[in-house]
Image (cartoon, rainbow, N blue to C red; front, side, top):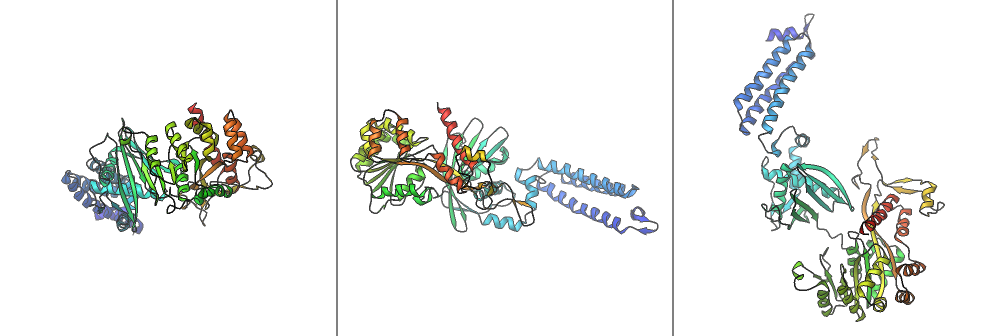
Length: 550
């Protein structure tokens, strides 16, 4: 063996140090591989004697043949291929015998190798899961099913938190689960996860929320918490069966929906109009918009604009979006449907004698008539209605109340709104739009030199592309509402009573200087808060929904 080694690395009576070192490095790298295969084969309960012998024989044969081949590089490649092929054969064999979390040389395994064990454990310990029963979950033993579920939950929820996801939806298909984050009102697809891996995650989060892990068809709902640096963030889990499998939805429960009037995106003159309601004792104000466009947030903001210590405030809601301090929130539950109606329950709330009443999701005549009657009897009533415009909301209200004079006399005003994504201040890009764009949207070119759009790529000081840490590369950060608002006066009330059509009323609202949604969004486009493409997206979505409903 030594003679072969000397012969293979000698040239003109001299030994090639580079060849010698290369040979020794690769030869001795093979020895730990033998030891690992021997121990690992026992762990995964396979034939350790056979596999150790195969690896040993392949390495020894490869080393000898390497020395026999005259061309050093060719011999080295033969050795590496021989040892590598047998090693990969063993890896494939042992991976087929273990659970997903214990497989080696997978993409996840390689990623984990790049992070030190101490850092991984430190990260896991800084992210504590708390059960529905308020018990902290310790980090499970590594290389166990519980640890794999824990690690998956940590990876998914920490990533979703960093990306500011307001919900995570797991949708099953035949082979995998598709994952989508809702960020700033937009669904962002994430890498899919195989079904056999998802079962560990699903079992872990259902255990956290004290749900039945065996029940996969009936809907279940529960809560758990994530504790980070002594701050608790509650999460809600909802499960439901489907033909493809169990669907999962996770949602952080935050107080972001409990905003002030100054926070929701009103223009200064609009804010001034709504602040006048603090001094008004009776009447109806209608808050309208499509679903998932911040209508409830606006309702809550207007309620918080009143002093809850001076005024008795009650709400009637089907599903509260948050807890309002010092305000009585009445909930219309599923159990109520068999014994009463939403309108009758509102009548019960009115009899309690509150000064201010909020009615969420007024979508029937009985409820509207009770609300209108309460306003005539001296209550200040806020009502939310699903509608695409101020005029459409008015049309619904007149139809529900079925008494035009009563509806007009008590009406204080109507708002309609949309949520739009705000541009990220850290990476938004200025550009000079063409004249056609100015003409199309009636923008004054002399006053507006530049507009802004979402930043696509951010570069560091070395010129390398990097992800914006502020918006996580989406180009947007948060959302704001845009409103069209009309506040009523005696002249407009007469118009509502006498006009024969909604378009006629709309013309009078326009003469009263009501700006449409597009005009209000354009004001934010010009100031650089919103991209013009975002305006087009939001308004075109409304048109599409309107067309489908016809």
